[in-house]
Amino acid sequence: GGLSQRETRIKNQQKGVDSGKVAFFDATNTTKARRKWICSQLEGLPLKIIFIESICTDEATIEKNIWDSKVTLPDYDHLRKKREKAYNDFKQRIANYEKVYQKVDEDNLSWVKLINNGQKVVINRIHGFLPMKMVQFLTNIHAFPHSFYLSRHGQSEYNRYLKIGGDSGLTELGEQYALDLGKFAEEKICVDQETGQPRAARLWTSSLVRTVQTARHIPHPTVAHPETGTREWIQMDHRIYRSLDELYAGVCDGMTYEEIEQLYPEDFKRRQEDKFNYRYPRGESYLDILSRLDPLVMEMESYREPLLIVGHQAVLRLLYGYFIGKKREDCPRLSIPLNTVIKLTPRTYDCEEERISLSHDISQDDGQKEPPSH
Image 1 (cartoon, rainbow, N blue to C red):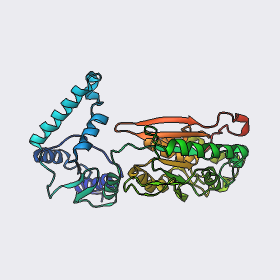
Image 2 (image 1 turned 90 degrees about the vertical axis):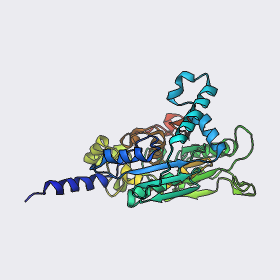
Image 3 (image 1 turned 135 degrees about the horizontal axis):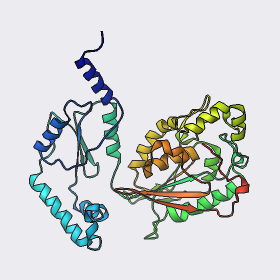
Image 4 (image 1 turned 60 degrees about the horizontal axis):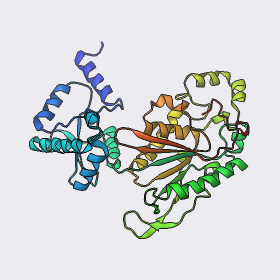
């Protein structure tokens, strides 16, 4: 016979719990009664409930957070020209919460307690892959301003001939971009633009020749460590990650799109219909790249220093889409041009973007025109 009503309900609950989806209910929930009410309202639904409590006892951090992100909340649009008044109002809001606040310590609930930007983390009744993954993510994120710089490699031999994949070196134009990028990194990324003083910075590339060659003119002097103050930080210390390698086109590697359309017309058509999920024969899809980027994104979230990534179109599309907040299905159509540095600065409610073109004299005839590519 079929499943009983109870068995069906349990099965649906399990499917919901294991769905991999996470939803956030953003509210203060400062009292035990409020948290108990939330649990009662969600009882019977196929989900796990986890409370997240962020505690900050450092007054300087609280002050900076209010000025940087709270006084610009939509709540204070009417006080846009009276920031002091918005500041005082938010301080009063904190004081009101403190009057009724009851700390999260219920033994029967699942919760994560983050103290002073993750300096200390306490968890209770957290089990399973996704909840632990969420805890890992929460311990990596922080409120300190930092920027990521995304750049494709300089023009490669394969770019020139409109071929995909491969492991070719740079053309003369690609080498010129590498020199320009080295100067840009030295003058803009490794120097605090407000003080003019050197600042610690990081560098990642893929393992492929064209990205390593593009990064080879970036200097690596020793500067003061941002935490200890001693001269022991190697500037732009080069880290090579295979996880940043370009999407592998399998049997189509080294072909032009015209050749693929002629030799594999069905595959070409399927890819045009669904670029995100399409997997090249014996190759990869965008979805495959996501899984190898996951640990690197966790690492990026933890950094406080600026990071330059010299990578490839498909990989940078996904990283860009993640920080900008694009749907992953839309990422394969995003524009990540050659000879351009994309500066991303995550903020409380959005991500600031700036595009800096380093080479203006490269014409489309030099192979820079992007075909309907990876």
